[in-house]
Amino acid sequence: MSRRLIVRPEAEAEITDAFDWYEARVSGLGSEFLLCVAAVFNSILRAPQQYPRVHKTVRRALTRRFPYGVFFVENDERVVVLAVFHAKRNPKRWQDRI
Figure (cartoon, helix red, strand yellow):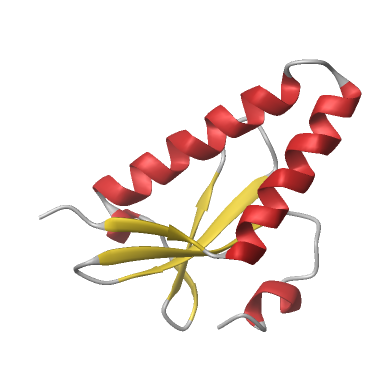
């Protein structure tokens, strides 16, 4: 059975903001960011338990090229992405979403 990926609206907004920021710096860089995030999403769906718990039941996967963490919770049926957060941001911001 495969899990469903659910990206919360707050996380979608963070992805969009990061895309816009990178794309404004260098044309095409925003698209590369989206590819990195998609690769992390696929990896999470394949094996979510490989990622460490960072707060209660929340796990974190890091993107490769960009300084972002994907924070998520999972069960047998779905993976819910709570945040796609820059590493320098205050973690209290995503913890309020639990």
